[in-house]
Image (tube, rainbow, N blue to C red; front, top):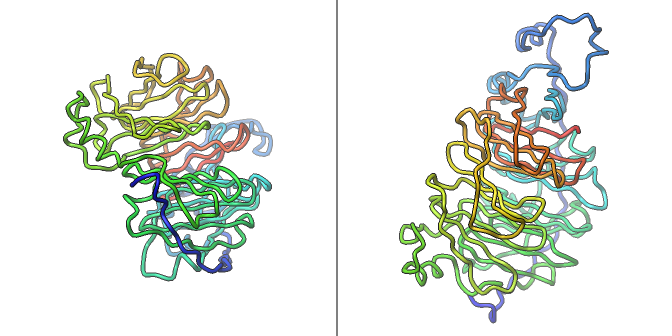
Length: 403
């Protein structure tokens, strides 16, 4: 993998995407009484209850498990109100893990939601309702794709998944075409970022970073070797766990200015990369517990999550190996992701419905207990802007930010 030899790809013809008609689910009065949690007595009529209360049941997931054939044909709708978040029910099987979400910049109401089991959903009302989206070019082979990442810039959009698949649109997702990939691509594509007109940056789980400037027809390597090759050269430099490295990332996150931080598959060290560097830079972890995930704060510093629920912040606003622990009420469940809505406000999510909020850049956190009864792991926190945010989980759980 060298920067002097770009990968060559062959274009494929466009295919019109199809949407699936769906119907709404309406629970009978008996079902609502059966599956709704007890409500505190109140003298205020229901229509005058405060907005930030838990309106309906959080045990709807158990209902969906027994009604999965029906739910797979139902429209998504917003229902449960969780303080500043609402639960959005989706027309998908309960076992689907949601992986990424993106909106068209020119039309902020129009977005796409990705997941396992070949899941692509589309919204045209800012995420209040979702319908399944079929893309013919992604259904020609007998594969059950895991769609990992999606990104838009203007009307151009990109989707990558596993097994290796790359989709591209230049009309805001009305039509998607599949771009064939080289069989020599090292690793599985886990992330893509639209960077400009006909341009994108793609990352694999083996540390390959490629850039295109002609709509995906040609790709040029940004690093000179995979992470495995780098570690083979640096194993004697004191990187703990490098000799046990399996060759893939557990997580990888990109900063707005193009820097990356990635966690090794075992969580025993992490790596960073900046534009212009020829290789990934490995770093020892300074914390006893293994790393779960890492990412970028709004001020340019790093946050770090460890297995078992610990949260750490790097000192200063740049890339640093010096971290200090922050106290969080995780109830022993792991925190899996952190997302910043603004310079000061951040949200963290994790196992068994853990949802935490910080209003001072991550220095202190309070738990949003209203989400405790959601029987799902919350894997990802995504803020499109300061007014639009989502939490993605397993079993098709999607929370929408209300503000």
